[in-house]
Image 1 (cartoon, each protein chain N blue to C red):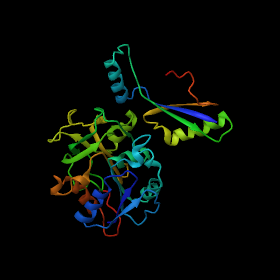
Image 2: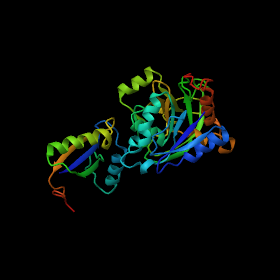
Image 3: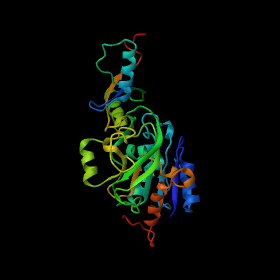
Image 4: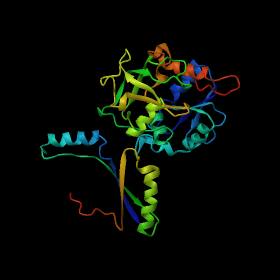
Length: 89
Length: 237
């Protein structure tokens, strides 16, 4: 099973990195931006046959290491194939 | 007093701490490799600054789950003293041995400069030789030193007097200008409720000899030595 974890700063936590990226985009002419926040993607390939089992184990990984609960929220997706879906280049 | 200085891959202040303990304080000290689990013969374990394990994922996150930090839990439960400076503070927070977390400096810049700290709590072995309100000068050197905790934790820190140092002006006034990284309430260092685990972003080891530009950091080490009583136990205050 493959799993994808998205780690984001909680709402209300100031994202200085996102603010800097937003300023840079505004400098490139993207004046329509209201807000921009930077997060992390963690792709996991694991020996776990079921989505339920994978979600439980990855949830444990998030609680123990992958996210800091003071600052960050996380979401877990389990997918058969983590090849980019709808990715544009 | 027997000191241990923990070395992770990427630690950079280990030699500075080792030098101050052995050459300035003339106390026994040894390096403790990050895979070690045996700390029992030590009185005080120092977690120095640097970029442990490259600070991958989050500053101090991987180190906070390393074998030596797991062993530190038993060491602390047994009354051992722990001083974490800079990355050491980040590691202690990530390990849950201290509350809160250190995040990216609000200015987004790495700050390497002298800072003034006002002493808020002298009821710890690390600060018992200091006066409340005393201003210390020591360097900071970090990119992720903005202390953050939720409102409930901050209230608890205040209620139990667990904030040890706050960034201040040279005269001790707490101002926004004297806050180098955007830390909540200008917090530069906090201690556990038992007073035995201190984390701070500034570098006392870089202010421990006149040749370094100041000796205010040495006052903390001298407090520590003064905390050791004859039977080998420690005064909490």
